[in-house]
Length: 309
Image (tube, rainbow, N blue to C red; front, top):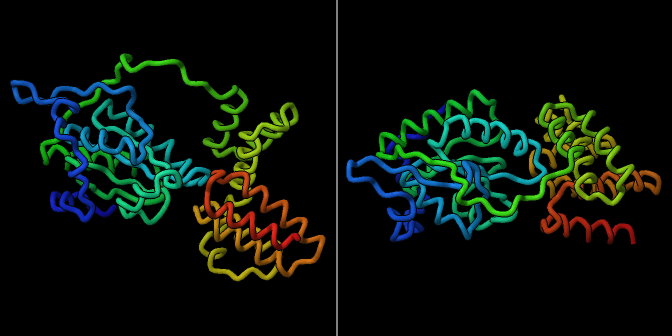
């Protein structure tokens, strides 16, 4: 594992220190008269970030390192990493904060950090970015990265703590129905066929359940790409329907949905009537995994409509 977390790396190209508020000490927890950083009270050790609230997390990074996870909704690698990363952060008992940022919803933040792949993880120490890693990682690797991050933070005088406080409690957030939670647990355990069966059962009772439609499509996608040689598929030029659909699946899995859609559309343009129906249904299933406002989704829908009519 490459060690990119040296003191020199704190003067990286992306300087976010200007985002810190003048009242940083008051907001983030000033040092006590003994010189010991006082704990910061937070609602949770995991938070959702965006361009509007990023300043608050930059402020907190003066007291504890802030881990930022850039993810893409519906990307299996992002989904898998989210589980490991949250588990690792919570195990540290308040020595770091995890901030999750939806790349599609916050493109300006992605650009500011020069993120190139999904998922990607960086950290903030005193408002300065520290690159950690890209892609999904085993839990032991994630733990190793975070332990090294804590060492670097301490070397730079950042060794505070967070305390989860119920003073931030508000109305309870709505929770997913039990069957949805059961399906998600099956996906996290790698039991994709089990998740498919659960979602199919949900849709028998509630055919209009959009979450179940998206979940079913994702579980089926994960099952179809299990054990596939991604490099070989990505380097191939599809010669038939099966090869085109597989390449599209792999592209969607790695976060290149637009290219995946185009792979199906390219095949669609030369297919006969019967094959077109297979391709159309497959493409609509891939569409259901995407964020509704994703620009590549709108573009692909328009292209499909043009080919149909």
